[in-house]
Image (cartoon, rainbow, N blue to C red):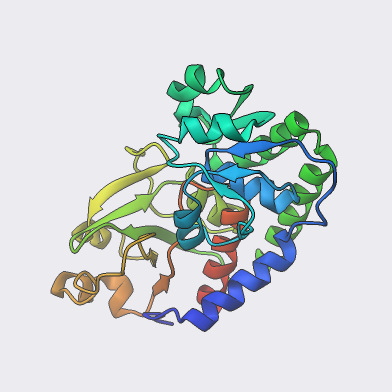
Length: 289
């Protein structure tokens, strides 16, 4: 089925369905005063039921990552790559959490509070497996081992159920960049590894050129994989452009002509387990429709 449009009500339903699985348990008390400077860490903390006192780019997280939502009480402490150090100092956190790609911030952050680095996107392993490990490590660091284990178990259970709800086949996962270019996600990316967990074969086999497991391609390159179903994810934070999907070359792609093209709303490809599950829910829905 050609899912050229993915309505807001349907997206809201999917978010709600995933939230029922991921949804954080009751917040335990007392909790350490944690600052998260990474969206992937923030969504993991919230899904575990741990409330940070501050997160980076709260407004953009709400728009792009979406769920789990950040409560109003949580402070926005600046950019992921350039936080507000003065504000962080005033907040007096017990711990600051970053990802490995933010390591250049460590020395300055350590003047404020202890810093823990979580690794997900290293280019050395499957992103979904790395996100599972990162969740366990995070739980150990903050003393919420049971909550971390529970989150992993709930997500694994849901993936197992989703894998039974469609007929597997080759898929290429893409995301809009502009009118003529796309990101094609490789097997070890978050999206690629999520689809593999569902039983699909990733039809894009080229080595990644991007940190999070993707390659920038021209739309014409999709014609080189004529038998694959194409998933097209809207670009996060940007209004979807229809020039790409209205172009002549797009319309003559085998997947488009034969009804093996499905459109998905925006997802953050640099996320963690909660994002992986929301993507898997959405992908399963359109490919079984």
